[in-house]
Image (cartoon, rainbow, N blue to C red; front, side, top):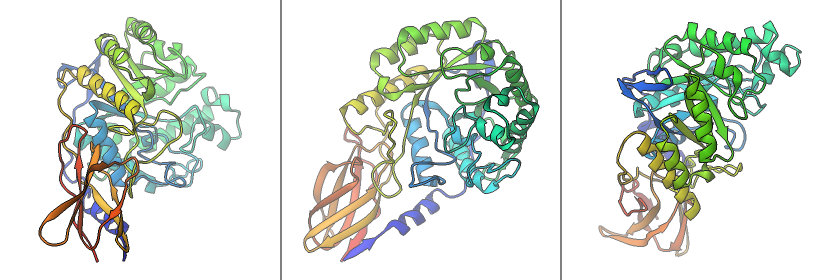
Amino acid sequence: MFRSLLSAAVLVCAVVLGPVAHASSAQYVTRHGNTLELNGHAFRFGAANVYWLGLDENVGGIGYPTRFRADDALRTARTMGAAVVRSHTLGISTGDPKSLEPSLDHFNDAAFASIDYAVADARRLGLHLVVPLTDNWSWYHGGRGNFTTWLGLPADAFYTDPAPIAAFERYIDHLLNHRNPLTGVRYRDDPTVMAWELGNELNGMTRPWVDEIAGHLKTLSPRHLVAAESQFGVDPAALAAPAVDIVEVHYYPPTAEKVAADAATITGAGKVYFAGEYGSTSAEPALMSAMAADRDVTGAAFWSLFAHSDDHGYVQHDDGFTLHYPGDDADMRRHADAIRAFGLAMAGRPTTAVPPPGRPLITHLTRSGDTVTLTWRGATTAGAYTIQRAANDHWMTLCDRCATDTTGTWTGNAGPGRYRVVPFTLAGTAGPASPVVRLT
């Protein structure tokens, strides 16, 4: 008999991850010269890029991520030692029917639902956010080219023509003036946001444009920091603009020497240095230790983290830098461990055991004769799973930590009865078993 449990999985997700009625209190991250502070203490951090939290391209088309996947990714980032998450689609959302601004000055406020949940969940988990507001590139979530195309102007007019500048500022106003119903706080007043980033890898920024947009943000949202960067190296306009607090640099690949040189340049100019992107495949212990030891380095965010799929396994991505935690293979596990050690070192925390896994959820159960196939939705921090069956009151182990989220599927000889899945960390710490499912 075949039993599909996908609708039950969605229901459980909705119940467990319902509205954030009591989001925890958050504090603003503040800048003091070329350093940051939080709650009166120096703030240095590990960070993760989770670009898809507001609008996702990895779900068989463009769509909104489920609450489960947003929560799974943010909890995973926290487990990996991250104190900050950088997420493009919490701020960049233009030009697609499902985006926040599908066409010029026409807003689709239904797009706020996934943004609102991710921001509220980050707040509840004690994470801070870096939110880019547009993109140099014309990806699915939109970019600066939307504003010039809508107005019939060439791409470079984004930085010089008053019309796209004003249109971009109207977009910013609509986003920042929105009140998140899950927290009751407008984004312009939400300390969960550490910094508004002018845009992702904005090549060609002019000093007047940076001054205009950064100044607009400081007027609208005076307690938030402003970050800026271009695609390569230290951007001179970002470095010189008084209203820019954080200057980002992206690395593919990073080296300890290049990071140290860029960080010294930025802090020497009185700004905060942040490695806004580095490829996860470059995260080796020697590099990460050198970055953590360099006091000019305030933070670094790996590219990029993907969550468990709603049904089974992990969400896949094909850019060569996808990271699943604790890792699909030995290389990914080594990179993930180095990233976690870096985050803990930046926070001044000792290296501790990985927390127990969350609770998995069986999504499908199929029997053909004596052959049973079982799939489950994975649990945060789990590196292996045990499959168990009970025909009466005694649980029998069918597979002792032999299943993983790399496939998210187990097939074996068994029969009718009750089934459950038990998660374990790679170190062998067990988490709660899945809800029991009966197969007849």
